[in-house]
Image (cartoon, rainbow, N blue to C red):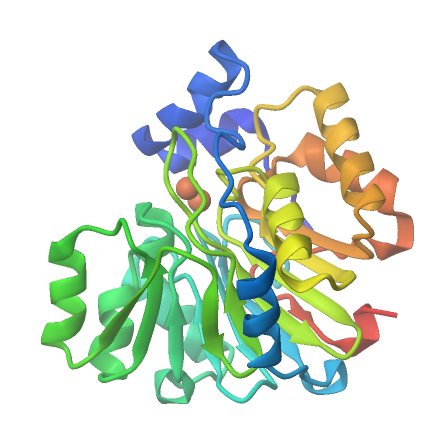
Length: 296
Ligand SMILES: [Fe+2]
Ligand SMILES: [Fe+2]
């Protein structure tokens, strides 16, 4: 696996990572600025309305990532991950360029027609760039997105027969999945995908701009379940080593069993997380498939 350096990440990610750079200049910028409070009664009702998927059936395949895992897949700044083994197949985010997304899907022998639901974590181009191409290939699907997405984007989904489902508050996405609800930061509002399983929750994050710790706290407040895995972008690229160590310790304190960070996590942060989680650190990157075998 190839870790990415801070400098390389900033070069690849372009101007929209100015928010990330601002984190360095102004500690706290963009991290955990606001977290939706969880109404226990509503959370309980939400949990009653969902079911737990069997971990044995679940497969998470990283389709798009700037971190390399399988050499035959193209790497590029962004993130996308296919979730299979649930009542519906979910594509979580879509990377930056539609042609690269489609090429990686093809290389992984995944047809867009397999996708039942599109989940868009936040409105940054490296996460939504391939969304309309997916809708062109697979029209009339549900698209779960933060309520703050621009109306033009929602209209483009509707024009292709899709249904934009705005997630302002925590809500059911499929029988096995929830949205954390829109969480806010100075950089961008974002929600994360919570998959309920028979061995705890799996949390998928796009960039984790509201803070990966805050997202896990929100997940635990909602579900009252142990966290089996947190995967995706952790956005620790500009954190100091001591800050990453504190966050790794907090994730462990929250009972997170496995982590599979990639995308905007940063190479130094990934090394620290690998040290903190030991054999429960899962190397991720484009082409990586995480299954029950990785989650013992
Ligand atoms: Fe990102
Ligand atoms: Fe982002």
